[in-house]
Length: 258
Image (cartoon, rainbow, N blue to C red; front, side, top):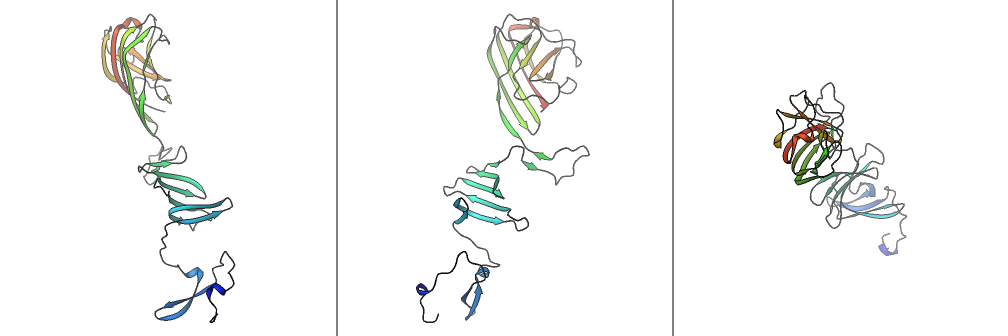
C-alpha cells in the first residue's frame, strides 16, 4: 500500500459492505474509520440522489427521509428538477403532493385533513375533512317534471361544498313560463342530498318577484330538485304554474348534506 498509487489498487467490490475502513486525520492524528461511520451522527445534504431499483435509476432532487420504525416505509420529499413541486411517498406509493403554486393535493380520494386530536362528540363517525369544492350550477325550472316552452332572461347558481355540507345559491328570471301545468320545482342541484330536507329542517330564504300567491313560499329538497310550497312551514300545497307569470323571478339559498 505504501508504494502503490490509488489507480494501481484492485477495484473494490460494490456495493460496499459498510465495514471497510479508510484513513482520516482527526485532531492531528491519522486514524481509521469505517465506511458506515463516515457520516454517522451528522446531517448530510446533497444536490441530488440517484436511487436505483429493479426498473433502473431514478433521480430525486431534494430531501429523502427514512422511517426507521417500519421496514421499507421510506418517505420522500421530492422536488422536481424544474421546480414543479414536492411529492411525499411511503413504501413507494405517493401520499400527497404540493404543486408549484403551493397547493396540497392528496393522492387518494377520501383522504384529507384528520382532526382526531380533537375530543369528539359521542356520536362521531368521522374526523376527516376530505372534500372542498366550489363552482357554478344551472338551476332549471320544472313544471310537472318537464320544461317545455320555459325560457329565461337569466338563470345562474353557485355552490360551495365543505365535507358533507353543501350550500347552493340560485337566481332565476323567467321570460316565459311555457304551457305546462302542474307542480313547480327547481332542478339541477349539483349534488344529491343524503336525505330529503323538509321545511322544518331547512328553509331557503330569498326574494320572490311576480309570483301570484297569497302567502309565504317555503321549500323542501328531494333528489336533485327543490320543491316549492305555498303557505306555512308545514305547507298548504305545491306552487304550480298558476302561481307563475311569464316574468316571475326568484332567488334563494339552501343548505343540505350529501
